[in-house]
Image 1 (cartoon, rainbow, N blue to C red):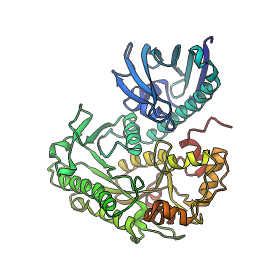
Image 2: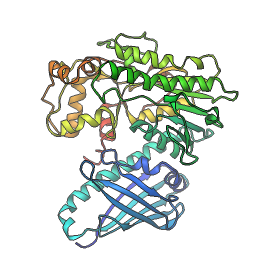
Image 3: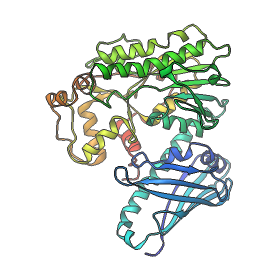
Image 4: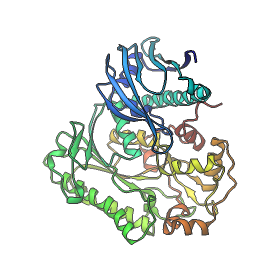
Length: 460
């Protein structure tokens, strides 16, 4: 097959210098990684420098993937850089990123790809072009949204941030998002540190050296096992408690003992704190609900008590259902809807309090630069909706029906107590404190959030 050409461009209200600078920062590749087809980095030298290389793996089906090595064969700062295939699935591949200046505060981002396929890949060319259109529309949308969010705080000093529990889809995205804003992000890992971007702790052994907080401005704790990963029993519940409380308590105790403390600690919790609230609206002033998830969230937050009187600003993020295809509930729901077997759960009248991952990231940076925010903060959109409405909107975005309702009995048989406590429980929570503190949601509408987080903004 002869060489094929593909291009995608966007006009941005930012200078070519600023846009190129975003691409140069650690985390840019992760932010541009498609959530529906996560590419993993096998090895990389210094990014965006002439003749440096990166080796990645392209996922296929299940555990199968293809290695792909690329070299930066052209590099002119603030103007262009080129990725050229050294080894990989294409016969040839050349990707030019061009940053076209249009005055002091505007530019055009242009991606141009020239590629050719081996003879056996030619029948897949139409699918490849469709995937490229979806990928680059999403990449440009993320670039624009990230820069819009970062611009809100561009005049503020950069922070050094220590993140615990940052390996999940939320933590990975948050590390990359904050890094592309120019912050120095360090991961707290449960193994020996590999380089200066990591520091070690061992919460299962109650080990955390005070030196791990040297020169740290902000601590963010996202630790906690996935509540939906396994069926609940007494052992599983204890594991969920331990994964949340043990790490939070150790962080709080160690920070409280420091002579020089971080200025801010952001600790994860969940809107499960409010329990099953039917159609009653709950905000940060509402009392604790009933049931295992409410008790779990209360104990999780209680583990941070040692910080209460230390002078460290403490924010507890009560996180709702986070929408993104890389993980969480949405990643589990979409395959069912694409297979035309999706629909409401149970009666469908229970409320879902959701937030786009993009707004969760933006809200964290907002918290960092808003000294008046402390205590519990609901990390949800201002538009909670019923499960039936959520299902209809998701089906519409995916262009699939939503006619198969999952009966309550079947859900309880399949998932046990988790079905009643989470899938069928109602959570109508609003972000009063975020809105009072001036946070402007970028994706407050459910359809817009699903289109963005599913990478479907290229479709008419």
